[in-house]
Length: 434
Ligand SMILES: Nc1ncnc2c1ncn2[C@@H]1O[C@H](COP(=O)(O)OP(=O)(O)O)[C@@H](O)[C@H]1O
Ligand SMILES: [Mg+2]
Image (cartoon, rainbow, N blue to C red):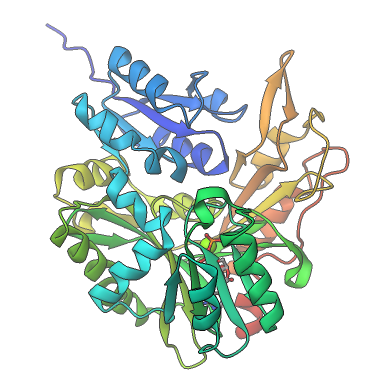
């Protein structure tokens, strides 16, 4: 008698490069799962079944999952997590990788995160939390310039102002508290000490009690080479980030990630999923937390997940079961670089519906092409967003990974598209020989 091979069903929630990278990595697991992506994009359609439900429509996602019973759901973006998608799935007896709504507040509320960090003794910039203009103005007097003004809630990466003058700081506070520029997200503001240094991202897998750090990475937020121009959702990333030395990793786990996980547990919040620490590394190696996110980073994920070898699903399952350990995560020795191909006007206004050509050639030249803003129209791949694709290259060192990624990028043909040509530059600036 033959037994049918058990094929795991996995739902990935989201539609960007991060979600394509998650689906791509899960598809490489030895168990060969069947993957669904809600709503996905033209890239996920090649390796998964797209389900036409918005990543933010929690009731519709829950209804789909109730009916289709995925064995595992991986949530990509922060919005559904902050809306409580994990709680809704758990209430239906479904297994989900991603924190509950209360845990997602580590990203959803910068005031909450600051309070947890302070209680847990995690190194972070000093901040004052204000809900009215008068107290904000009086608190501002105690800060030197530059000073950082932050909206409390989710603001799609636009809620932080580095004010160089008191007028700029006052204006930012007014926009948030009086003009309600960010709606409810700006009804509380943080006035925060400016920290100098170089930024890095650490994504940690967390099971409510234990944590395993994934390799370090660094994002490039500005639109143009040399970190010039407006902020974007990210124009590329690389891993590892040499600003994070091997000696720092256990410190980051023991002084940043685990104290937060324990503090949350004390408050009745069992945090399961990715806890992402945005770090500022000072000139002398001081580690401070700028912020936490409650999910995989984008585009860091497109650089970090291709570096995970072996199977990833057992590690995600262990996060749900509370049985996470280091042996469940295998890191490949290669470095990786991911370069975002964006529409000409991005992050300002840009055209959509442009034909995307050269995908197969790019994939052959690099290691992976992840779709960020694409869809299928009349059988062809067209653009549907500002960040269109991310091309990832792996190499024995960062230099060869950079070369591999750009070999792929040059094969992509999209009218008017552009990309930064200096991804990973900070790694080379600091160590010219690497
Ligand atoms: N205290 C700080 N000192 C210096 N720069 C900061 C500080 N806080 C934030 N920043 C800068 O602002 C960016 C956005 O802030 P962050 O807290 O990550 O919020 P978000 O990602 O939600 O916009 C950071 O990546 C960093 O460049
Ligand atoms: Mg950030």
